[in-house]
View 1 (cartoon, one colour):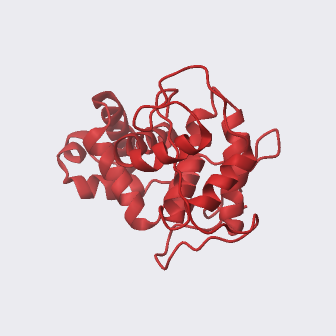
View 2 (cartoon, one colour):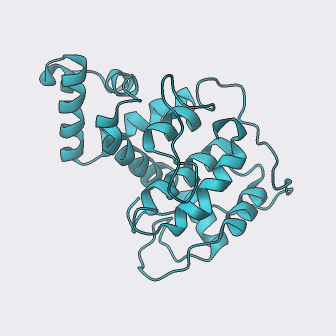
Length: 219
């Protein structure tokens, strides 16, 4: 998300304890520790760092990950898709033309098979941004409303606004209750920290610790 692509979600439901564990359902392959052979990195401030690869591997379940990557191939800008196709074809030793002609689901599956590749980090960042912009507007808008951040349909279109403190982010998560799936909320918060935090580090300081509390095993 650029400065034009943020979002939030408000909900009124039963509050949870600050350090409560959140249930993510039965679907496997989404929540857990670092990938094989990979350590969990941190920032200079001691925050657990959430890269796009880690978000898609550890937070997104298999169905969400497939949907996010399909949306990338369908909706991302042509230049981003071409770059992804070139990197992926080289990694898989495919002809680029063959990859471009593959069915949508197959292209998403192949891209997902390289979820640990640093060469595709930018592609996965764009995939997360595209997904939230096009598919998660309601969730983003609700959280931004809760934080008092001006937006249009979940997209921040102003430069001057106050980034919510971590305590307010936690309150919004606690209040979201059954309105939004916990996995979708964690996916959003981790993505906000990653994509918005590059220009406004306060977003990472506010969101990533909350994600870590939602996913105790991911720290």
